[in-house]
Length: 417
Ligand SMILES: *[C@@H]1O[C@H](CO)[C@@H](O)[C@H](O)[C@H]1NC(C)=O
Ligand SMILES: *[C@@H]1O[C@H](CO)[C@@H](O)[C@H](O)[C@H]1NC(C)=O
Ligand SMILES: *[C@@H]1O[C@H](CO)[C@@H](O)[C@H](O)[C@H]1NC(C)=O
Image (cartoon, rainbow, N blue to C red; front, side):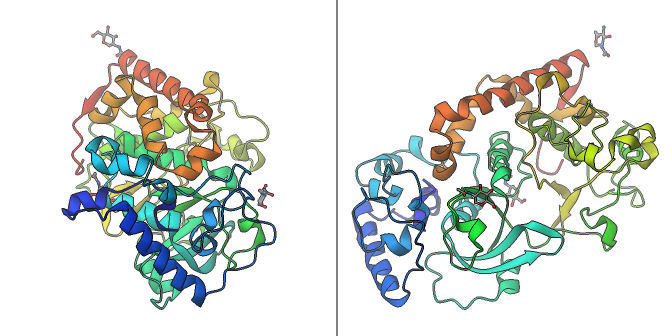
């Protein structure tokens, strides 16, 4: 809990408040948590003893569940390190602050996801592999909790499978590139007794902020979309003189062209096929691919049957796509990259392309991922993450070549586009 996982102090700076002195803060927290610890006996987790080397602190039982059950290095929580280490350096100068591509809202949500106490859980019908949880931020303790209301208030997260962890990387990529279409996501180890054992067995899982107002079609067969869109209609819409947003009748007509450019760029870098090409028409799939197992690939012969999936917007912003389920395929081989994801796109967001061209993509991603301590440490820090980032960077170069060879353009991306 607390800012144990996220090294983020910016809200103080932005609001003009002076950050509390680290020592004073630590004392306050220790006191608050001591009081908490008396009120709520910590759940017993026989399988997650404290690492023998970490000295017992009064607050550790309740405040540091994230640091339990990990490798026996006995890592002390970030908060404890702050008076001597990074934390203080970060607060001294702008250089150590949270990277500028995170908005204050992002930072708040990441903090909630990383350290909020799990106060409720809800299964999602037909999605057995995920759990929606209500989260209570530190300082909100004692607020009564009602799952539905909490979620409407933006205090919920979706815990996904350990293998969906790349979704956290995708979130960082989205922000580094200034696309700003994914929902905040962090990696976390859960210990709450409210959760089933498979969620508390020590595995790192991604938790994604739950957007309360995603628009879903009423149609039970198509509730993964905000609007129904076939591949051919989509391609038609992308044509320079295709239907414009003003044509109210066209499907997904509230979504401007620039949104599809962002989506295509993002999905190409991550090789997310689900949205634009869930049939794997753009590459030769292995027999183990879901598109093969579900016999979808056969439909490629008839483009009129192909539909887009996970095309979502929020009621509060119907002209912006929301990217969900972004884990993608880090292992997807380079010789099989899916160029169909780029089909019909003739212009890309200028600032994202500039970042790809800068040669700094890997270092920016490292700077960003460093904020997520759980992900960072579980992957062995910069060295461990390097292969993954290199893969994305190589895809970026291939995308730039595609742009060059096809004489594609860039557009200035105000958020309206
Ligand atoms: C990112 O998008 C959210 C809405 O989805 C918006 O509130 C926020 O201001 C945007 N941030 C930036 C930096 O554009
Ligand atoms: C914990 O459970 C999950 C889901 O069943 C599984 O994928 C993971 O390997 C388990 N982790 C450990 C450390 O046993
Ligand atoms: C790109 O532009 C060059 C020079 O104008 C032209 O020769 C080439 O055919 C164009 N390529 C494509 C794919 O349009």
